[in-house]
Image (cartoon, rainbow, N blue to C red; front, side, top):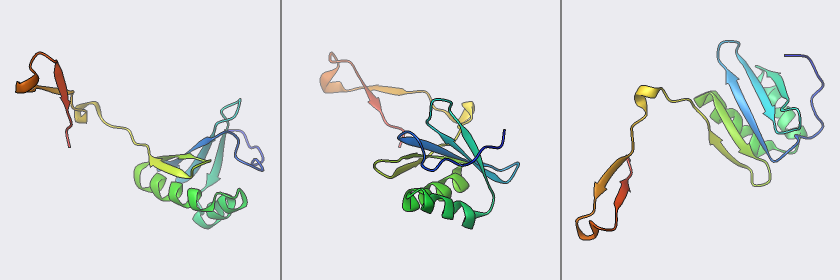
Length: 115
């Protein structure tokens, strides 16, 4: 990863904050024309300060917590919504399960949630 100055504002509408456990660093992936990535380091206080400078204090804090817990977090800048992003092993993925509704047997199958 080449060294580049941090942007003054995070471009685009979304960003992905990745926690690289092996290197013990946070990596910020932004939605610009080059799909740039920035190594934010491992100092949580400095990373929180960086998000505060970008005027994304609450969104950044939530993204840091989720990334640290799950490995990565995606954030929507305009709304401030964040979501955990994590890989699932193929063996843990369950195939969709369908069950016939007895009253509407001719209407087709209904997807049954796993939860």
